[in-house]
Image 1 (cartoon, rainbow over the protein chains, first blue to last red):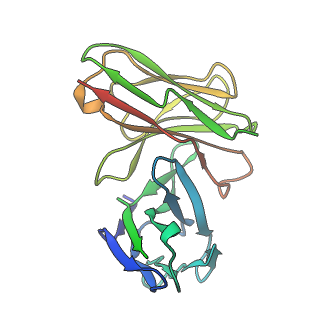
Image 2: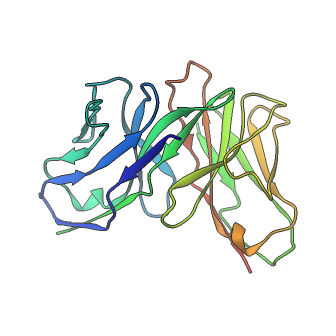
Length: 114
Length: 114
């Protein structure tokens, strides 16, 4: 079945460091791919998405490119801030009987220190 | 526009007790979902609804029931709580504008079953 694998955390960085969080997927067809972010004590928020191969999603300085050939959707940011500390979830949109469903990775905790 | 809200925020139950979690959305969304979030497992779909008066099972439906009597509300019930149902529960909703539409999440309900 469809699945998402993302790197285990926590990822600990100093402010202004470069961030990469790896995400790979297994799916039939051409699923849409997402990154969600969960700040402490809050629900998940959509960070960015890409709906077809070679699309680049971007938001708040974060980017991810949908790579069909490597089945990857790695999250990157050139210069992280303390306020980026959160848990990041990679997800794909799979198909169910009469709707879709999001299939999530296990999440990667990012800790950014001043 | 409050988005997706969940009630209560936190609850402690004893084994065998029952309770209902309420999800409400004010975006006129057709689709609603209940997920549970457990450490190291990402989010898993419990039940979902594609419209008022409809419900369907997700990946982990056992021990839960749901109802969608009104379009804006999606209730998740635990008839006889078990310690394995200790988790954080998230509700989500989306519009019916095609499968590329984004799911919007509530802030979550933390449930502890003793």
